[in-house]
Length: 152
Image 1: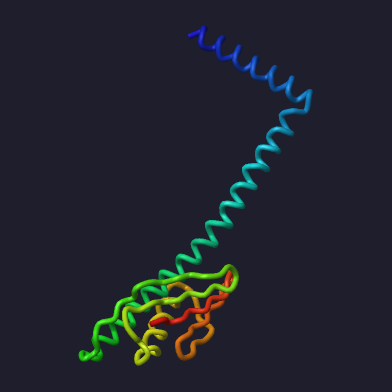
Image 2: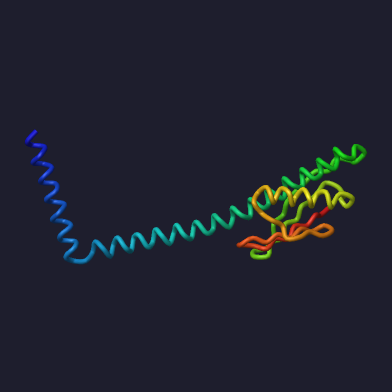
């Protein structure tokens, strides 16, 4: 047991001597500050990119889900209507983002139903659309301005 106490004291003394030597040269504080600054820069840069992409994905997902819900609702209300599928969601632009929702056939007769459904889906995801008209919906967030269009 005495050997363990002696070994522990020797290790503590060695570490203290190393710290004292490094402190005398001013290396310990500069190295830690430099390392912390590099790590902080990487974390902030990575966080900004992830937050930006997360918003784009969240809005696109809500738009697609809303369009699918809108076409489903319209086909349930009108049994004579042919089924319409959402075939794609295209995202274009950097600050002013255009999201185009593509359908398998014409949806001119149910534009308003689909836009209301997209608006409800966006509201459910925490986004409030500014306005919508004919076949476009406008959404503004802190990062981007979105124009959502229906393409058939």
